[in-house]
Image (cartoon, rainbow, N blue to C red):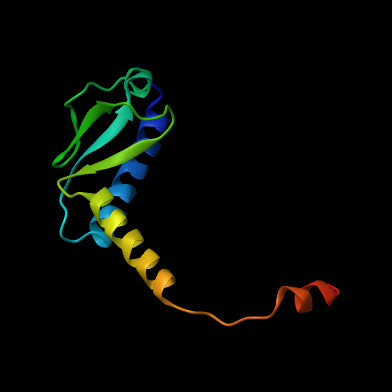
Length: 108
């Protein structure tokens, strides 16, 4: 069994991460925490165990020492859409600036 202070600190971090996720993504519902299988064993937790009300632990292929909030939303699709909008804005905007020769003569 893992040290109770380590488990308490992790539970606190899990609760903070869930709260931050729910605050930043009000349309998504968090349902779990993803941990590397090694971390599950190290902390003495079992996959599917409910660690907070409505939040279960799941093993994933994540990096040891990190965890992620699992939810019913698709975050990657939103990120791709945002990146696409930025690319369009940059591609259609003309920006004036100094000539490269002017920049070379400056001393910093």
